[in-house]
Image 1 (cartoon, protein in one colour):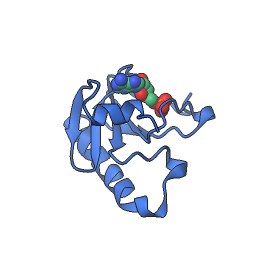
Image 2 (cartoon, rainbow, N blue to C red):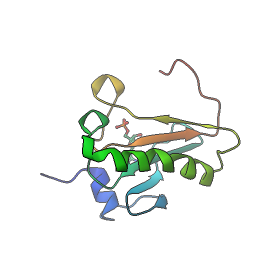
Image 3 (cartoon, protein in one colour):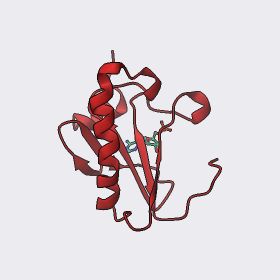
Length: 114
Ligand code: AMP
């Protein structure tokens, strides 16, 4: 199967502005930011989307969620707050078939989301 865009970023085949990396996850700035801070946090394991995660993925999913505040803090959001978004499927606007968690902040967020 061909590599997704995000697998190519993990492999450094295409450039990204990486802000955090460890053995299980990578975080980089979104190319089309929707807020003053907009980072994508992804597992290095190519899980297609959250609805396709398996029971064996608990550790990596837990690690991903635990690292979101670490990345948010690194981006200066720990005092003001941040929003985490995972789009799953067409109606949610999912565009890249590699699980990713949007970390958004730097401005007040509206609710309900668009
Ligand atoms: P989603 O709509 O939830 O699938 O989000 C995909 C996100 O990937 C969008 O916010 C895009 O702006 C972002 N994106 C697409 N290509 C790149 C890239 N080369 N580097 C960083 N972010 C990207």
